[in-house]
Length: 630
Image (tube, rainbow, N blue to C red):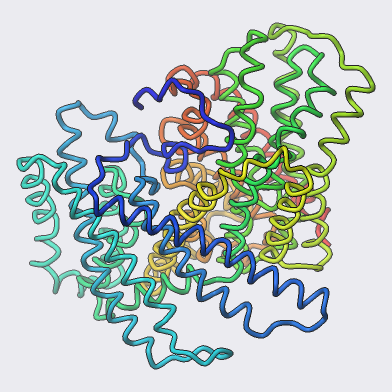
């Protein structure tokens, strides 16, 4: 990973490397690319604001006026697809799409331009194909009318071809950055890979479901390890499988992507991302950390406890690991350095803490797995707390064991100082409890409560003007749109790929294999291994969307509680996400903490080992998860 800038990262500002999990730097921009980026930033920021207003109106009419609005949810869904696609374009223009670059970085320097050129050519081919298919899909949607507004659905679906076309333009413009020899070589390699699929198309058709082992096996692996964005890799593999191995029209890919990205539950994703940055801008995150530091800062290793506690509390507000790390790091790490703590070891603890907190509501991963696997969001919010406590206590015990040799002791804060810090932190401490109570008691859905959280944070900010940096609101809104688009495009492409796997009969074969693993305990153990490995390589969201619809029915057949299974696999993915050498979250933590991954790697393994022990305990004793269920 290349060295990062020496300047200190402003609080709440998230570097592209952390968001994308990649070390790629944004290429030199042409005037057209800059124009597209600025336009998408304005549209994305505006759409986030409009979504908040519309959902706030829906919440007000439903709960305050007792007269539910009939149009607000429909308009929110229409604009949600536009927000997702605008954000995807902005994410591409900023080079923020999630990709795995660890394999490319391991290659000799002379090889890397060839591999990067190949990944770029794959993106161009995929975007050209998907743009054509999305135009046909939008035309087909013209005959469909929305139930409330009674307008053509093509107004909503047209977000797809427009966004894919803009992404294609960006990628084509960037061909100028590739040396002609590398570009010709990449085109030749792409043609060589595609030739057997074209020549032996009849063979692939005759093979039926067996052909998916090629398209969704080696082909996907090659694209991902070459650094092709994960969303594009999944989408390209799905299109290739449908074109060469089936008679199914390619527009079904757009239909499945549309369905995956248009789930109203997923509208909570951009809102919680926005909320996560708001808590830093309004000073809530800083006040919470200062309060914890006043309580524990005087004990040996106290700031390590503060880091764990801060992540635990803020995870309940933001729902985003990137937002958590960006909020905590500028506040705690400088003070830790002053007290003699090793920055690499602190970043390792930061990464482990984020892995521990994956199940703390309102985690975006909880919302995603509830949406794609049909698990109760309220149940996930209730069942995720105690497992997170168990994992946190395991880390606390480990920190305490090594604390007698580390750090320095500072004077204990006075009672008055603690009380003052508590009063400042109280608004922030109330917010996670508010979110959980509203969802668990059925007062509001996850989407509605995210809106309530945003309004609450804005009100707190307005009442405390000195804590709000209003000039940062537009960049924050644009960042929210970009990160949301990156995440939701993965959800859409993984949904299409999961549908293809299901239709091919793969899900039935997987169900039989996993069911015959020897019972629920071998099944659970195998699931932990699979999700740790795939969570490391692919990042949590695509793994959930891809395997959730396939494995949850197996778990139900074996008598495993849905919520318990969801919590176990989420924690397993968390361990994989922050495990080197492939874990994207690990590199995100290093980027935000401004430390070398090489220095951090040796510190994180003991912490991940502790989390793995906690995970095994949680998996072996379902009562840890189910005791809190309503």
